[in-house]
Length: 78
Length: 415
Ligand SMILES: Cc1cc2nc3c(=O)[nH]c(=O)nc-3n(C[C@H](O)[C@H](O)[C@H](O)COP(=O)(O)OP(=O)(O)OC[C@H]3O[C@@H](n4cnc5c(N)ncnc54)[C@H](O)[C@@H]3O)c2cc1C
Image 1 (cartoon, rainbow over the protein chains, first blue to last red):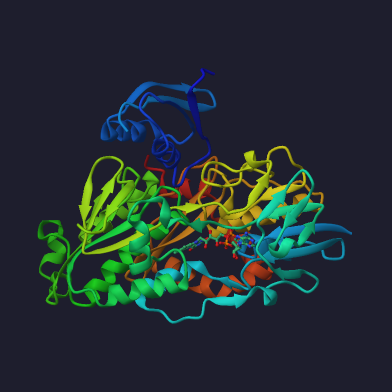
Image 2 (cartoon, helix red, strand yellow):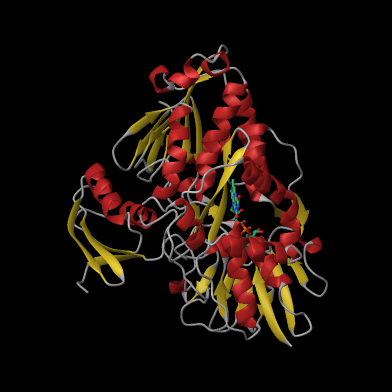
């Protein structure tokens, strides 16, 4: 795990879902922060993409692992 | 006899206490209040002016043999197995379960304290819900901004339930709801729905991507939101409120003007000083593993219900099922919470649905019906039996026949 990367573990969250944890982390973030989100909810990719577009932040990577979906987000705007 | 100390006599704490064998364990509940409230009814006080009595003394809701003490816990030392109350009273334990629910935090958002004190809300108390009702019933027209100030909130459906019940209320008062082009043609010619007593707009703001956070349920309710003329502002996480200019600003950079603000404040975990302090997250919620509710590093300490960090909704049903699992674990049996949620969702006009899912299965796109509404209303009566454990057989059957796996086969099969 890289230093300075905040892990947001939302595995298992179906309702209200992973965006809850992402929005909570965003409130306490600063420009330059990197989040790594772990989720199992299938809709997480589309939702984080829509969130990043809306807030002006950047999805660095999005990949599927056997037990989770991993999304890396860079905070460019806060 | 081993001592079980339960902090909080809400749904979670009472169900746990009432499922422990008091011949085997010395069980004590400590709560700062001597009353227990049926919180789902706040909605009907705030939007219908209900006068139903929704509280009962905690001392009357415990089974014989369970002790109840009225006291506020300020400090818990997990290493020394001690909890501290007011006036330095010390409670020792062999097992501790923390079930302190959430506390509203209107001071964490600039401007919110003033709104909270003036308009109330429909999540915090009977008093606040009555205050909100006095504004709703006297509303003369304009824009109502309604929503949650932060993503962490009790009972995810309750936010949109508020908007639905508000819309039903305003139309009932003879008002129109929505900017004209958002009213569907099916409503357009209906005088009851176009309104003669003034014009109103309901703007539902939410930090989530859509009206209802979980997408499968959104598919069910979004057409209703549109048809009723309720406007939605997604990805709207409240940053500041400019009370002078009646404007709410979001972290995402948008603003929303209001005439009447209905804002559910952010909620936080308990104001208790823990040793070690690492057991609480930045919002004071207590860390616990998602299947056994154990506080990491301790075999004798659990956090159940709204006060923990489990990746599930903060609802009475989860508090209930977590409490049942912890009661078995304390009594030496194996048990596990599977993340089951079952949140009743009043879609107004006499219909309701349930938000059902668990850790492994997504939310069911479960359609609203009058029967489900009847079940939601009946809960206000059965609730007291639920706390005592006397309604367990009904719930066991209900949960068995309505697993998200089974229901998704039926309702989500088209996907
Ligand atoms: C509008 C609304 C609608 C809802 N609808 C539903 C629904 O339809 N179905 C559903 O399942 N759930 C619903 N809920 C959610 C449900 O009410 C809560 O999830 C549930 O009450 C949580 O139980 P709990 O035991 O964790 O906490 P609570 O019931 O909140 O109890 C916490 C207790 O701890 C005590 N306490 C706190 N701090 C201390 C301290 N330091 N020392 C001593 N005592 C302390 C408090 O006084 C309180 O009695 C709704 C909630 C709201 C607001």
